[in-house]
Amino acid sequence: MSRWIALLFAASAVACAPPAPVVPASEPTPLAALDYGRQESWLCRPDLPDDACRGDLDVTELRPDGSRVVVPFVPAAQPKVDCFYVYPTVDMKMVGGNHTDFSDTGQIIETTRAQVARFGEACRIFAPFYKQMTFGTYFSADAEHERRFQIAFQDVAAAFRWYLAHADASRRIVLVGHSQGAQMIERLLRTTFDGDAALRARLLVAMPIGGDVAVADGSPKGGTFQNIPLCTADDELGCVIAYNTFRPAGVRRPWPGPPPAGDRSACVNPGDVATGGKHTLSMAVFPTHSRYRDAMPGAAWAKTPFIALPGFYDAWCTDGQDGFRFLAVDEAHRPGDVRESPIDLTTAAWRTKLGLHLLDMQFAQGDLVRLIERKAAVQ
Image 1 (tube, rainbow, N blue to C red):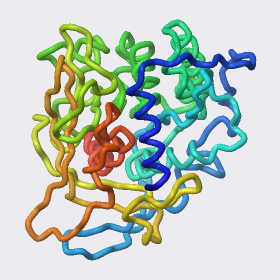
Image 2: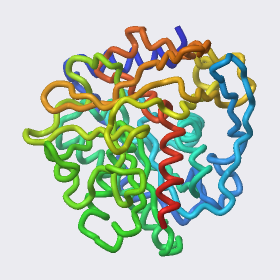
Image 3: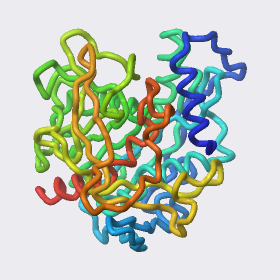
């Protein structure tokens, strides 16, 4: 079993267990936000000489006839929009606290490249470092969790303020985040965009993926945001794409759990925004190699940093229990398609309360990029 699957097992086992006492951080907590005027506070920024979102981003496409074709990555020459991205939890320490040691940023960089670097086909990317909560903080008491979350969020908010102060006010904004990063984007939307009509007018789309967005039952609005709806059309602007990915059967007691009474979990299918119905995803993209884990199962042969499977997975929004709605993903098995999945979706690793959480951004990556391109063309 590869180490990245083992990590999922470990995280899921902890997430499924009763909350355990968390050892508090022993070091004093730094309260000041990072200085985003300094280049080293950013992973990705268009003016950085060493930008984690650039470099070799080529893919090997696995096509239905079994052929493998290397497709060079071509960044947008003059993108019309900016993507502001917040990465997910990478500090897996069970000690409650905030991540403050940035001496080795390799895992953060790898995660960022896997999830958002190829969005450079559609936008300029701004991705800050931030003092995120450790994994163990999720098992802290509510007050401690909120304190640590706010320390992390003040970094995200400061980075976004720096972006607003330095970007042309005519440029439209895409907000992207996954898992803890999605929760940071959700709070940024609530505190900065929801009550500001002028700033909402600059919002092309928000993509808090794998978070806990909720809407009023039977409505694309309400719940988490009062003035920012879920997207219901490809060309709709100022709206939200949000979902959590599971196998079609779902799981018992899924994370992040049922929404408040009267709400339902957000699910917008990137492959079919209008109806959420079953649709073949245009392009799943997976990283192939890592300094920190074994090569992805089924892709050790690849010479490119990514493999891509066009038209290989189907996705649709479906209802679970207690208002929990999720994006179901399964292999499409089209006639004549001889490909085998590089990931075995039948293993127990994907049937925990986290479901397919680690792959939320990978299955629909091509569709998310195309959505940004289509929405940008509306301007």
